[in-house]
Image (tube, rainbow, N blue to C red; front, top):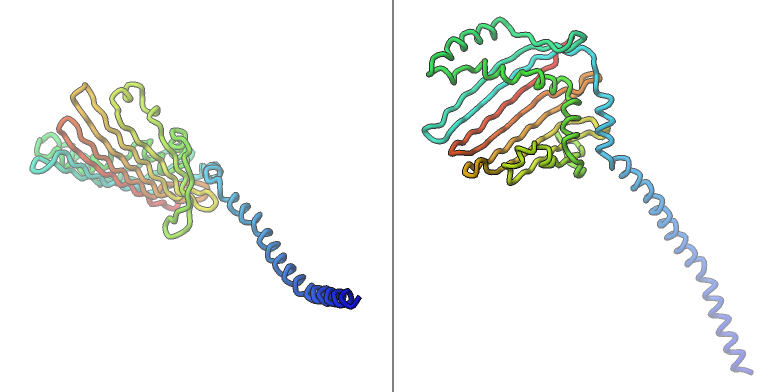
Length: 287
């Protein structure tokens, strides 16, 4: 009987101790439950914030839809060109430079040549008849870059972007700074099937990509087209070519324009080698 009483007393003391510690355990579980609850509450926000910027392609297309402005537009456009053919002592280089003023409005795209430019054209055309002067036509070389399609891609850049995106297959999206600010890069692969069937017969290696840097709202900031092709023609003539084309975009009103376009090309084949570079800059003018 004494043993039972002692055991009963010890058990009662243990129970009392356990009961006394319950508030501490309750506080511990309550504190950790609150922490867990806070963490769990952040998870939906984390995923939602990620989803808000996950579809860069959709953001890009949405921005392009609202940037197809038709308001009148004026600009001064300048082109600088450089071309090199051959290597070593036999290499020939030529440079070009020209500028025009353009207007885009209800009457369409108009190009204006200053009297100075027209005078230089006349002089260079006369000199071109002499063999020693054939590569000294900087104005004529520069003016070749002002085709309607080239100018249109700069004053209405959404058309250019749409064409390039239609040629490619969406590949990926990544975060990357542009101009020191956060941006996203939407990337496309351009398949070899975009070449004609005849062209594909001569191509052994083909690589082509198109990247577009976009702001948080999808507005295009810049783009880069790259392609490298190598192959063989007529069984004995091997060739290689590389091309890069970069645009820098800006928004004027409801219009997406290109402030700068830079193209680099290089190639070799049949014992010949050449490279070229063209930079076109656009400066908007008040209408």
